[in-house]
Structure formats: C-alpha cells, structure tokens
Length: 155
Image (cartoon, rainbow, N blue to C red; front, side):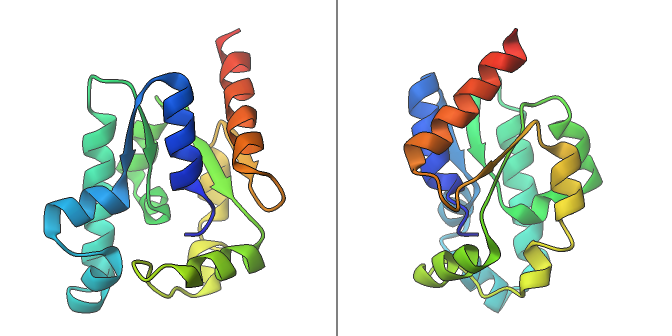
C-alpha cells in the first residue's frame, strides 16, 4: 500500500493501450465495501481471499491488461505459479514513504510494517521481472522504467 501501483499502473496501461485492473476497485465493485471495511467486518483472511480471487480472474482474461494487485497475493502459491507466466513488476518505496502515503487514504487499512515488507520481500523478489522503487521517482520516470524493462524483455 502506498507504493504507487495504481497510479503507475493506470499510466502504464494507457501507454501500452491496455485495460487496467485494480484489485481495490474490483473488490469494492464486487462487494460494495472497501478493503478496510472488509478487514474490519469480515477479517483480514477474507480480504486476502478476495484479493487473490480478483487477481486470478484478471490474469485469466484473454484481454492483455495491466493489473495492480494487493501485496497479500504474493503469499499464495497458486498466485506465484500463475505470475511465473506474466511480466511482473514490483512497485515499492522506502518504508517511511509507504507509511506516509498509506495513511492518506481512508480506504486503506492499517498494517504493521513487518506484514507488508519483511515477510513478503523474498517472495516479491523471486516473482518480479523488474523492481520499480517510487521513493524518489516521478510517476513518469516509474512508467518509463517499466516500459524500458518490457522492451528489454522483448529483445
């Protein structure tokens, strides 16, 4: 949360002329509740199940897309297996910046630092084709970095 994956993803989708899927929006559209509300009323495990389900649905589409997925999905072995066939970008930032950005949105739930960084870093590093640190990059620079990595992967 707070890395910029939605903003970068939207711009990247536009640059690639692809549809954009955002797990937060998909969950809210499906349930009528934000991730924060689901975590508070139904529990974090239910939120993570929904995050997993919407990602797997997006990945199974025949239409090429840019997908902004929740960080929790990386813990699921099936998701990691499916991601092996996709170009995966890990959008991250300095922990202090993530905390500050995450505090801005009312749709985001409070998480412990260790929950979204320390426990998942190894899994993200293994799955990612490219890592984009948005700490000191503009959205445009972040998108350009992903586009360059895609071009390099195609060569």
